[in-house]
Length: 442
Image (cartoon, rainbow, N blue to C red):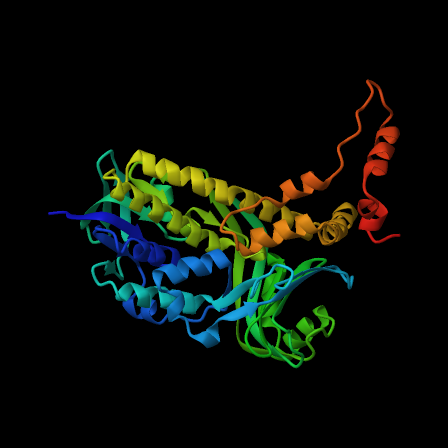
């Protein structure tokens, strides 16, 4: 006899566990299927990754109780951020004072988030967790979904959820296509101590050929993320500790004094994924299975939390109205809302990565212009800050602010020489946006 659930969630990562907890107060029978062991879920290994949580994500975690389970010493506020390009000392600056926030965001180790989500779920024993369980197949029809396990057992549910990584096997089995971008780059992540305090400031240094990010932890410690072409990544793992320390010191131009590696270096290939659709019949994608981000804007986990909260809210509303919580209307509403929330950020992030990893002269000039333009347009800078911190609980497109503050294009006659058009456009710009000012050449 087949077991019948209201919701089956495949994947007990933070997104899957958070979604299960979001449903815990609803009159639903929920099961979570996970291939990892109970011991691994209870005490996840440290993997080098630190998650920069936005204000919206903190709110979501507070609502479901997982935030309260994080150890205080594991939460590091990010109070300011500086973005550098090349060897220039000029930076695009953000701080919590101008944004009127206690912090721009909060840095938390990934393994602590996973542990907190698991412990919170244990407080709701009616949510059934199935560790060391592997899904063999998934099918759905108009009435329910059927999940076949590798031991031959079949489970049925009114709604099946895939939360099984950006390389989701469940998404593939359900025939949902995804756009995938392999950046041919890899990230080396580790923790380091330094002799000079960071003052809770994050540094993003777009050097030519590599990117070095310094994310502030509590004390004189930071999470370091070095991004390079994948063919060069292994050498950063194979360096001696002294060589690696010196390498990071040199890249930071002594900004944080002497740097000392603590713990292991971890290597992660960078691949971004966005599913073309997030839903099918009695089926939905959440977390990285829906959208897997490049880490440069730190939005991957935040979008995962946003998506599960969106779907849980729509399901709760349907239940309150006596409607089918897994029906077409609810899933289509989730699809529409989460696609709108993710597409701009996903493609915008990929554009940023493309611009800041392109080594042509035009790209280098465009990078410098972008940093100065953002610094000199307060509304644009505010829009970027709002989008990155999510303090207003919505996704904003900074390009809208940019367009709103550019002058209208002059009307063109039927035939106008290209040089004349270019001259008119430059003359129409405010002085602070003149190309020579933007590039810092006058």
